[in-house]
Image (cartoon, rainbow, N blue to C red; front, side, top):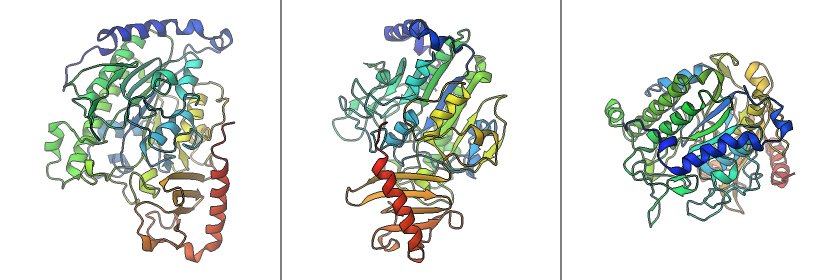
Length: 468
């Protein structure tokens, strides 16, 4: 493991410039906002993993994984059993997190480009980083971005005071090159300036970056908002050798994937230890979520992850592609070891975190719901009234979409379904309560439910791109 280094302060002049900017940030905040008392507000740390299956934590049902740090974090707060990503793919999921909007309203329903100069989510979308910055928070992005590779759509243009990470979809952790289609290219940046740190393991650097920030915040009364987007367990699978040895008796590709999960858990453990060692843990809200389900792509050896009893994986709107592990912890403010079964989603972090921090609700149109009542009351109703929608990939004439309404879920043209499983119109209807594994299509037996859910979807898709 790489020796600890103080990247944030000493590696480059741009970092010092950002610190100077951050130290002057409060001077530019309108007096009315400053009077709302940002000093003393809780910090926010969002840990966003990449291509992690629903059951790929011990606490979420895995019997063969060792994940003590994330299990401990989950037990320290509230964890969800029906937490949905608004998309089964990386960029739209992250757009939803940042904006509190369905991907269609966030104007990024598909994967963002990994080519320098290409735009992604439009710069006029209002992000959580911009929101927290408006109220006096210092804002940090560390890790994967994948929301745009142009000047107008990169992190510093979307509300982040400081950014260190990569802009594309995946990265070799040691060379920091994007390996997909040629020519291979370097993709590691600090505040829009390319930095070359070959040979250093990127997750180590993400911890070191956070550690330096936490050190700077020990005696700084201004709170921070940090989006810590680790690129694990997304391919290429590059775990620590000790974990490959630990899982050597598991079959392939589970052995390599499991080793990468434990590598990720170890890095997150170091991150949380740094937060505690710098005296920040008690006043920091920590959120954890996977962006979507695990990958079965060739570059991840065709699988390795697990959604437990649920069908599907990344790209699919079956449960395994969109139901993800997620939890929130805030020492002394949220009860420990709580489980919530209500339907909630990553659209909800934006209004919920604003509320927990005592800030006004976002004034832009969002799809997320404040789930504070759910956090505090296990019997509270789902803020979405148990209804949610998805559209992802497929063709324009034959799109993949789904609608969940209470226990009923209607899918159209779902990826990973066999043709003979679908109706002639491409429908797959399931009762999630009685058939959570989505094995049996009952569309033919319930044409009235199919028609009702199709009408709900038609109305949603016709209005979801409205911006105001």
